[in-house]
Amino acid sequence: MDEIAIQVSNISKKFKIYKTPKDRFKESISIRKKCYHKEFTALENVSFSLKKGSTMGILGINGSGKSTLLKIICGYLQSTSGGVRVRGRISAILELGTGFNREFTGRENVVLYGGLMGLSRAYIMEKMPEVENFADIGDFFDQPMRLYSSGMYARLAFACAINTDPDILVIDEALGVGDAAFQHKCIHKIKQIQKKGVTILFVSHSIGAIKSLCQEGILLENGRVVKIGNAEDVANDYHARLALKEQEKATAKKKDAVDSTFDKAGTITPSMPNTTSAGNGDIRIEGVFLLDKTGNSLKSVDFNQEVCVSVKLKAVTRCHPAVVGIFIRDYYGIDLLGTNTRVEGVDLPVLEAGQCRSVEFSLRLPLLKGSYSITAAVRYDQDQPVFYDWKDNACIFEMLPPMERRIVNCKLYLPIKVEIK
Image 1 (cartoon, rainbow, N blue to C red):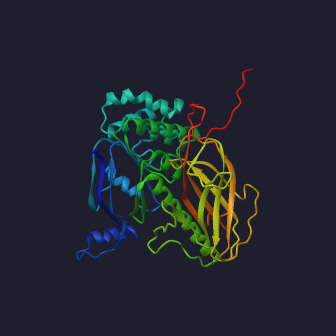
Image 2 (image 1 turned 180 degrees about the vertical axis):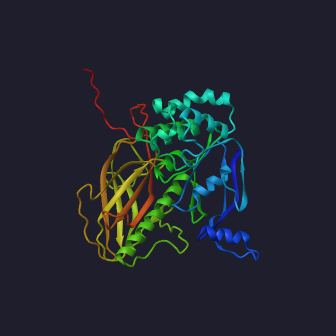
Image 3 (image 1 turned 45 degrees about the vertical axis):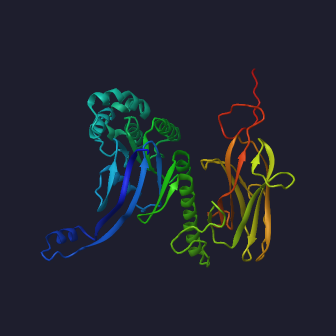
């Protein structure tokens, strides 16, 4: 059995909320133990385990308890009840720059950070060139941090955490630090340490980052675990819940009565096997089919084969859809191809209650060998992320290897002409 790096058992965390500082003082000196606070439950009975060498992403809207959970795991907060067991040395990026002294130089703060992590000075000095090179802030490395821009501050903080060879790396919404080039460097570095077997636990609002970097995922809502499992499934569930919230906002703003396809507990009700669904249900996606030129259903596709993606719609009430779109994703949930009727310049007709229509997208698939999925959506306002219906993993298919045994290190191959002049 694989060793467990992080074991979280029934963690709960409650905070005392006071209206004013005076209330806190009055409560502390009250002889009758009069209560002047309200309790806020940030986490309630959260449990999960993470195997050594695995990467888990934590998703949830702001206020769902993500940061509180990480702080408890790292030992910065004490839980009200429950326990955490950690095997290995943790390097954490919870709040970028936490523990730094703004009057110290960058180099001096690296020594300070390493000391707080329990590293020897000799080891810190050995790692100093790696940290300096990764931060890439030039001469500012030996200047006081009060002179740093926020981007430089973030670069040094990330460089310290990720270049000290931790057993467990904990990151709280820090993959978006710095400029685009630095973000790419961070992702590349994370993938490198994944190969070394480092356990990673991180919070991110980026569904793409969760899908591409994580094997496992956990979704928090109001301090509770609402879904845990495969990272792609959890990310799709999170996406569906976001779409529902946007839909509810738009509905309230427009004062339209919208029937939800979610039950009272907020659980997604799928209409297809292994499919995540969301939308108000006025138009339903009855099926998504991958067809060849003669209309036959396909489960496997030849490289660059001409195919048709057929999205079958059925109106529950009289509706006028604005956009029908599709995405083709790889095994890890990364979007590779996508389009919609608006992009292609096609206007959709009004659908009467009970009426069915098929929207067909004809294209070639220059994809390399592997498993792929098709996501389809239909929405009623092109400028709002509000859906009649939206289905992830509505159709799964396999790409066969190219007849020409080319070795191409990518998922999508486009013909390229090469000349030497």
